[in-house]
Image (cartoon, rainbow, N blue to C red; front, side, top):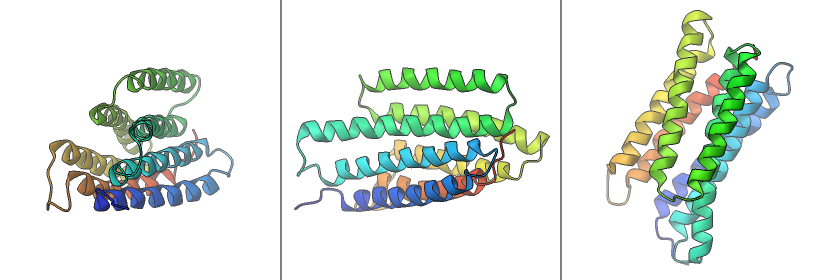
Length: 210
């Protein structure tokens, strides 16, 4: 069996493993009262792990899997990233925004996710996934900076650092910059994203619902 992009496949699966571990640890923390914000991030890590799993198969098994299966996996990866982004946004809303405004903002996030799903069902370009991911994390960044300044939340610094690292990873992925022919822009994106996700995990583990 010939693997077309072995490093990209391996780094994608590395992301899957990291996301699975983070999701498990966060879900256990989320069992405590008043931690829906933490559970939301656990679900975000689960769906992001699914996206990485599907993406790894597309990059590595393109000569093995049929075209319809590859297309389906790519669609699944894009949709999973969108769901993950919404879960990551809902977490800070639980932690930083009081009812009833919180319910309205969560509803708005769900409507946005529905629009994203419809759009991605008609498009395959990964840049739309990055755009949605980037805008969502920009909103999270604003919320967390506010939480850090106004409420002195200990989670804010970790989340802000994680978001900034994630943004750097996304810019590199879109730029096509590669360190080596055998270590392309996707591989570098995955490795930097692992660092960003580790920081995001540290911050989200400290969330407490408002």
